[in-house]
Length: 250
Image 1 (cartoon, helix red, strand yellow):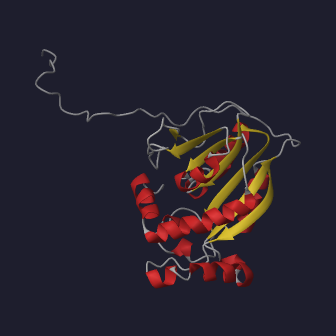
Image 2 (cartoon, helix red, strand yellow):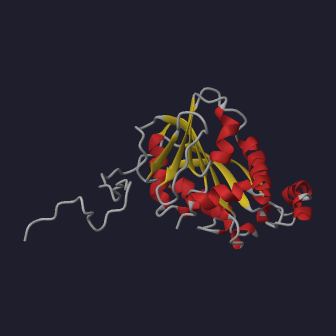
Image 3 (cartoon, rainbow, N blue to C red):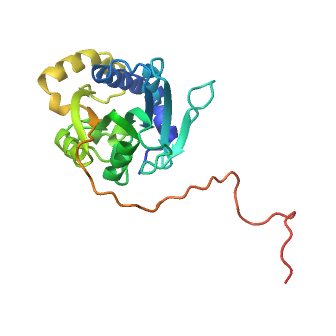
């Protein structure tokens, strides 16, 4: 089950959410430095990180799963947000260069189908970065953050899943070595925790960041599939007819 969009947004407004964002952004910068004139899609809740890449890209879109909900982004500008089903993205084949998944894969109903769909929309040589909770880390065991929900992964599980779905894993990083505490004194020590954690206990990070490249040289059987989701916007309650509604005669 997805974490609700309201809870995600509120978490990143807190002090703990802000320092978590900074830690993950630092890890992302070691994997993706710049994305000059490339087309980037964020899948899940990537808004805290998309602004860091947006200035260099040709275009940036925020795709948010229907089970999570969506908010308008960027604020004060034409919306680049879409509400989607992660196994059927509203994009043509080979249409984007990069995909960033945050608060996404751990909530996917069928992770393999989701990654196969991302493979479809990525251009040849396109790259994917996944940020997922580490099953060995403390953050995956604490329910007061979004990283304590969904299905955590080990590095080996994530690597195997990527290879099964025709991706070649590449660069990786870790983040969130400090405890998910709301105590300000502990959060002020986060930089020391992050430095020591990368040296002394990298296997116990809060999240794993893995980059993978779309693999083209392996053939896969392709079978057509019918859509399993139909979304119907509901803008008003539908219940008992009002007095203005003419009832059928008996």
